[in-house]
View 1 (cartoon, rainbow, N blue to C red):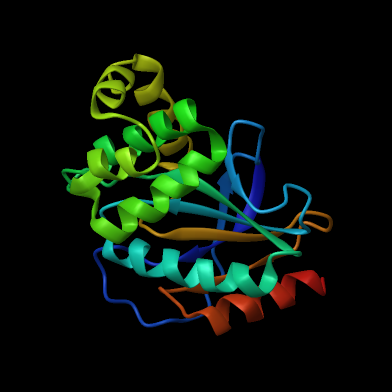
View 2: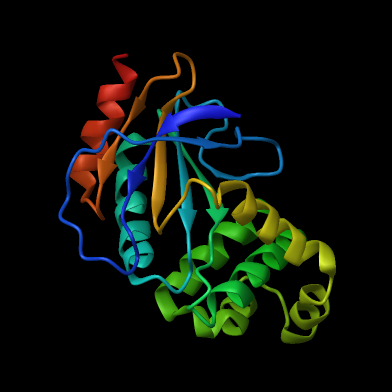
Length: 199
C-alpha cells in the first residue's frame, strides 16, 4: 500500500477546481490492473471511475487528449468504483472485465471508449463493438470471479475514495504526487504531470 495524493471530483457534486492537501491510501499498481500506455512510463494516473458518471465520461475524453501529447511519459490505470445509485454502473463494470477476459487489454480499453461514448446502459452493445457477443457476455458475467474483481477494486478503496472520478497522479520513480480537485481540463492535468516529473 502507498500513501498518495489524489485528483478528486465527486460525481454528484458541483465542485469548482481547486488544489487539495488530501492524502489517501490505495493499492499499488499490479499486473492485474488495466494499463493504457507503456507500463514503464514514469508517471501513472490511477483513475477510479464509474461508467455511468457524467463527470467520468467527460474526464475520460480529457485523459485521451492528454495521452496524445504525453504518451511517452504517462500511462493510465483504470479501477472500478461503481456508485450504488447508478443502476448500470456495476453491470457495465462487469462487462468491461468480460471484454478484458475475452479480448485482452486492448478489448478492455476499446470497451471503455465505447461505453463512455454510448452510455453505461448500452454495455451489451459496447461489448459487441469489441467482438464479444451478447451470448458470450451473458455467460461471462455470471462468473463470480468477474464480480469479485470489480468489488475487490472498489472495496480496497472504499475507506478513502469518496467520489468519481478520482485520479492519483504519481511519479513512479520518486513517489512524488500532485493533488487537483474537480473535473479539470487537459491543461491542468498536463501541468500536474509536469509538476510530479520535476520532483
